[in-house]
Length: 292
Ligand code: R5P
Image (cartoon, rainbow, N blue to C red):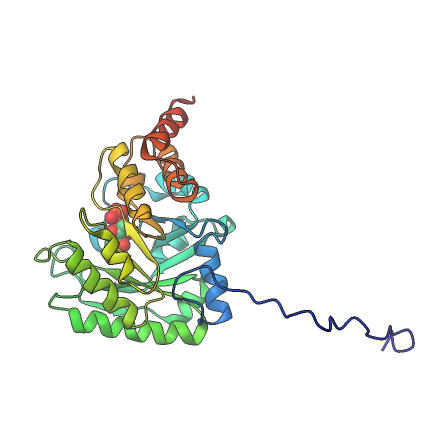
């Protein structure tokens, strides 16, 4: 070896200095493996503890919905402002520049569309998820529906693969037409996801008692935005969710269908990461929107 004769004798052993312990910042995830924590730290900002995810996976069941007809024009400009993007592998490969270097929550289950019975889904290929460097595997879980058992089996299988390769599993609670989005149902669905191995859970906000949903779920929850609301109301929804224990948002239509999507995602960030009030964030939205 080149330094064989000039090797400096080791002397600084730090005797008496305790070894630094690194706790993990996300609820219920102290004991997951290193790769899992690394990926989670790309999805959630370790400084604020929150995430703003941008969802544009709607096309995998709905086709070209409003705002997603030309994702290269409407979504690509928003990517820089998201902490994580949630999309199908088709959208990822066709319109997301790999140089954006964003965490990707990959749609990892697929099956029926809005034309038939939703949620009859199978899994994608784990090697393909690894190939695109997925930071999370997003699985539809339809608790209480005809495909309840099948979608829970999909979640279990995904969590096993995710644990094997260090990739978090995102359990996405699907709400069938016949089910009510109240705190009682959402608590049950989120808890089922967590108990079966979801690393974090995506669900809907409930008008009442949402805190019960977040408190009874042992892992972080992010909320979907749901149908398009006036911008101020969407900011209020995000604010209420965060105040009541959500660890972030995974919003689609309330961002890409906003009058000014680039301003909207920045306003959402202000609520989620900076704790700004809905009114403050709406002022920010208006200011950015009016810059020519
Ligand atoms: C639903 O399962 C999909 O994951 C959507 O991406 C999700 O609902 C979020 O989109 P939105 O905020 O438009 O509800």
